[in-house]
Amino acid sequence: MLDKLIPFGVTPFFWTRLYNKTTAFVGHISEPCDEIFIDGDVMKNDFFAYFIKGNKIQAVAHQSRHVDALTFFMAFNKNKVPSASDVKSGKVTPKILRE
Image 1 (cartoon, one colour):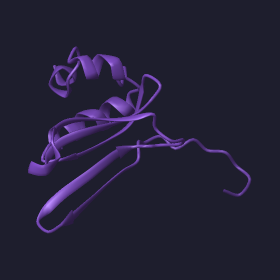
Image 2 (cartoon, helix red, strand yellow):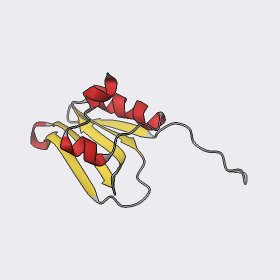
Image 3 (cartoon, one colour):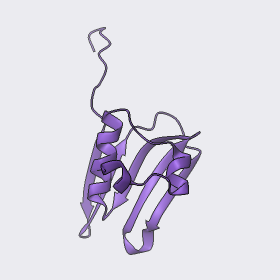
């Protein structure tokens, strides 16, 4: 803006509530993802989705996992997001990140 490049320091997020269900998204997808890894059950509205490019988690989305989303919001802001392979293998979980 005004010919000045000023970095944005906070990870983007949004949430919405529709039909008494809350969905939230944390992160930034600057190019198409290679994969969306889902932990949980989408049909039961209890899931955590990881948007992955290469081995990097670019963003997450969820229903019914607010604490996990906040954990990743903080990890993005601290530049301490685990690798996608660690998350997919179960080596790193949002609970482990909180410890």
